[in-house]
Image (tube, rainbow, N blue to C red; front, side, top):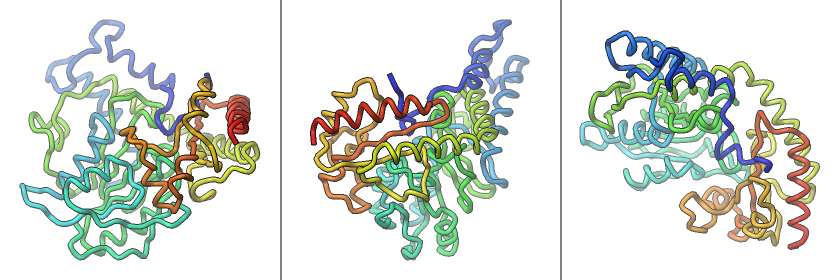
Length: 362
């Protein structure tokens, strides 16, 4: 099998796996201690958690703190609900870009009818869009998960500040690949999108920003209750440290694969900007393509259909619709994603399989 679905999840880095193992048991059998316990085993585990926190924080802006969560979805919900619904009172309206992940989009609609910041045909959010006067929170992602476009987070964060609103940035697809988004008050991230373990995310919160907890209990993470997994934290920290050290090398590798993919898929249409993007995300379409049949014909290649949302509704992606694609164009889109461990030979072999299968349809 050839894995080309890195936007869905990344392989666990060996360095992250090694960092986790001692906290699942340990050579002396004491690595399982509760990091919130006051005894020796607990203090040892707590030290590992704090080291991991520092390593994740090294990829974030200065002047804030990392709070571990069970996922980026939880981090986003904590940020949105915890800032907009404070003390049981709604603080104002939410503004989101038209291409936000469902975690942001669905939460925004639960809170109220959000103001939608439009995007252009390249998938870039409009920085000229005026925010409503009662805006309390602005949510714009750093890198889109479907089409890979980079967003002007700093400019929109400046608009949010002028409006007296907070800014949340979903940096799940950008963490470890790009510098931290500037100007944000809160940043949500996930370990398994940068070669760390599944089951852990984090919310970076700027100093001075207070949130209402959404999970009550011990408040082990100040705004969030629940016993932390030392192993997951350690794996996240190791993956974050490695991503920081390898950021430029990973970007160069991704760009080399991108340039080759553009050559291989000559005649296919690329969705989104070709420059302001994560070059490990290759969203392309071809008229007349039956993506479901393509996936059936190419079962040895792990890639993503570009049209259906996570719910499996079969409806065209709101992201692809937002950039002006027709329903048919959206349904003829695939997303290929590569990363640190993808070889040029794997990409070329997979591309040949996909292109040959597509030619049998068209």
